Structures are given as structure tokens and as C-alpha cells.
Image (cartoon, rainbow, N blue to C red):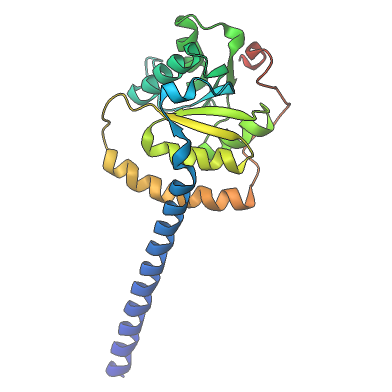
Length: 226
């Protein structure tokens, strides 16, 4: 009886180890595929200037308790404003989390741009950009974006581009790394899992949390105020 139990435990350990190896190789394969597919679409500011994109799509990130953007978001906004001033995109599309009354990324982002002299009508807000996948789904479905320059940190550009391309957007990205960030290694590890998750999402294309009426990014950004 003890011998059979020992054999059973050994088999379980072997099967578990095999599954872990297969899972790890699958994650690695998906990440390599995604990164290789989009790597040539990561541009410098100078390379993006002549794209004439519908918009510069800025992905949201943490906002401080005092209502100012955190370091990661500030760098994204600074890079997006440089791109906008250099003519890389006709409009700014701020996509982030405004799912609670006491937390609002997108108005913080829009106000930041307006304080730098950008006209309100040139800044659109996606209040329901709760994830990278949802931001890209809504950019295509709600804002009718056909060509975009995405602004986010380097670790995040691969997944962002892959999601956008899967939604039919002719997307490019400019990395916004203006400094080194805390938890950079843990962020990279989380991103490996997130890429695999979004890879599956892009196959089945589930609808985002919210859809709504179409507001073309070619129009007036004031229609998204709120």
C-alpha cells in the first residue's frame, strides 16, 4: 500500500513538472510571437512625425491622491504632447479608468494637455479604458480610429500594439520611458502573463465592459467631456 502511494506521488510530481514546463514554453512562445510581430512598429518621435495618424492614443496609469498624474502617467503625457506638437497625430485620445466618481484618470490627462495649450476639442477621453484590451477595442469601435500612435512605456508597447492591430487599427508606438521606474523586473514578469492573456482575448474578442454611441475621433473632443 505504501509502495503504491509512493508511486502515485512520484507520478503526480512528474505530471506537474511536465505541465509546468509545457505552460512555461507556451508563455514564452506567445511572448516571442507577439514581440516579433510588432517590434518594427516601435518608433522614435522623429520617425512618427510623418505618420499623420488619426490620433495619439495615450494609455492611462496611476493618478495621485492630490489629482495629479503619477510618474508613469506624466511621462506618457509629456511624450504624447511632444508627438502632438510635432504633428504625429491630429488628435489626442486619453484612454483610462474613470469607473468611479472618486477616481478619474482621463480628466487629469485632458487637463494636463489643456494646461500645455492643447485645445479642448482636440482632446478626446475614453472614460472606460479599464484595460489595454478594452482601450484598443473601444478605440476602434467607439472612436473609429484607423491609424494611431500609441504612447506607453517600453515594457507595455508590445501588448498595446498587438491589441490594436488585432482590432484592425494601423498602429505604431513610441515608448515614453523618460526615467527608470520602481518594480521594473516585477512589471516585466507580470507583462509576460498579460501578453498571454490578451493574446487569447484577441482570438475570441469579448466585448469590453462598456460600449456606447460612436464618437469619431475626427470630430470634437468636447463630446467626451464628463
